[in-house]
Length: 599
Image 1 (cartoon, rainbow, N blue to C red):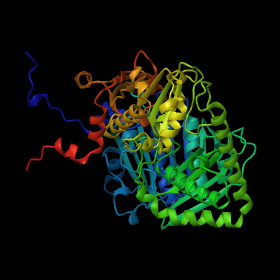
Image 2: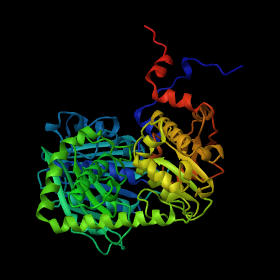
Image 3: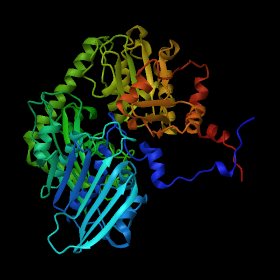
């Protein structure tokens, strides 16, 4: 007999208790299990005051001996009426960012009203000090419980407006000292966007003033040591009201081929790309391909990204990010499309005045294309030699028995690249869904598929030779959602039509990716089945949900995808019903027959 189940078994958690039970649902759990995210949540609020023009001093103070962290600014100060400091510290989804933005903040870093509540819930000690309207308010919490509250008159010049100090709890963090370099990078990014604001980082009493210009940031973080010979740095910008889309870019003629970029969105470092990066890439491709044709220069769209180095600086009213970590912009392209005309106009204006720069960059693309064509002619595209650096997308491996991972986008690829063994694991990111096509000719029109086939090395049709396959396994690793499943199916169809022998020989695999995992101190256990998930819930395990591969840390991806002992691979078997499968995907009538319409 199963256990009895009744109303007495239902429990209702407070908001604080829920955060404490499932911290990884609210904050990003980092390698090393330290509280950097708590500092950043407090810092977001200070930066919002600075972006709005009310604060010109922001400081972060970290005491590594006492294990305390403080963030302060000289903005307007949190209102003291109606117990507001207590409300925003204890109630989820509270704050000024949900009202009419004209009365609060138009551009802000914090978005969800979760931050300070998470800081309180996961801290042993928590205090808010506020100076506002000739008053000094002090609110002290111990283990998420309010202990003291004082509000006094204060007629002197206030030392600051808001100070939040906390001591992370060892119940939730193995290391109580945040990643100082990460915090410093957050402040460097903010200093570039707010040149009139003073940023100070104080570590154990040692004060560092942080200030960096956009040009210095570009040189320090966009360029690599190999980028000795670069074009002029070009800056284009588009504005609409308080929003802006600014990008500084240049081309490296001597460094590595893949594009390299960093970006700041509402003063947040967002370095895993997203909609804004893809939009800019499309603008560059269209612009330079058009100019190349007018100058009788052979250039493909993908060539226009070779050696690109870019720094993005965006201010958006309604940014949307992938996950609480906010490392990738996921707003719809239509939201950013209003920036396009002005960006194109700015690009056109610069190169009309600087024709020599245009020819220099187009010649760089042409030289790259000639090198690719020469390799194709001499090697017929079938070389087993490793390190195909000519491919913009492919991050190759050195072993002839390596594994090729085909993934969705640069975000997932970036994590695998960080955790892979370069000798064994090659990575090829797809940009969006490949088109559904039922003939080899139509499929090969897609640039993504064409470059993927080149990476395989087998050729197609009469030129196909399985002996030239450059990998022992081809592994499709997509997100565990309907879009990911759709991409896997489209990719399987493309392989079945173009290179069926790869499937028939048992070398094409699908990687299962988890939606949930048990997480904790140095713990990451993927939950592959509903049964495993339910058992974890019954055992009160700490469970994290992952919307996609881009939200998994590199070490987690190693467990899920790379380690043969812990990953789940499914070998794709050949079917004699390929025509029926293609019909299912391509025929509207077939799809309608599968749907049972009921009124």
